Length: 280
Image (tube, rainbow, N blue to C red):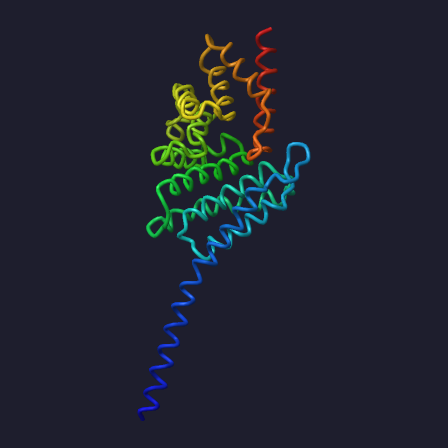
């Protein structure tokens, strides 16, 4: 009898120890997956053709972040890093049209489910701001595929605006003023439809762009967005806009944002050509 009780107690202790070991190991596995994703993200532009990166490394990052989020859906860091990686794959790599569509759908799904886990989310306020910002970008990817008027009528534009506004309140420094840049362009380009997109305000275009520029004047995206806002909203500041565009058009891409900067530079060159043609 005593031996039987001893065996029962020993078995219970072994089960408890095993459970504790598994619980302790789980964060280590998740940390390893996140670290692997970060390494792949850092080398996302290791191979570039034209203005597009080879998708191999970013797809490794996507797999690692996706796995981390699956195991820990409450992780804000895993969520925003997955959203960011999906956007990079779609906009900056040579993945097929089929994969682009798949990644856009996945990004929108990840953005949608953030509300379901928000009560139990783990992470910092900065992480929450990044989830909201990259969620707004996910909605933006969907918008590029259906047209401006359609996204306004479907409420997608409103969701983009709300997520960007919330991100801005939590941390204006996300992506060096990313929410400010996005909101400036939303107010500049979206149609204002009564009772649907009444929040669109052309008067906000320039102040938002100026705030982004003030936050980080060296960021080429902030320089470009300010130039576009000046062209749209400040006829008396066209020389300033041209100077900014010339600066971005001559940009040497940053190593850590190589492909992103290639596309920003091309946008600046196109906008500069249009401006000079208009001023002839």
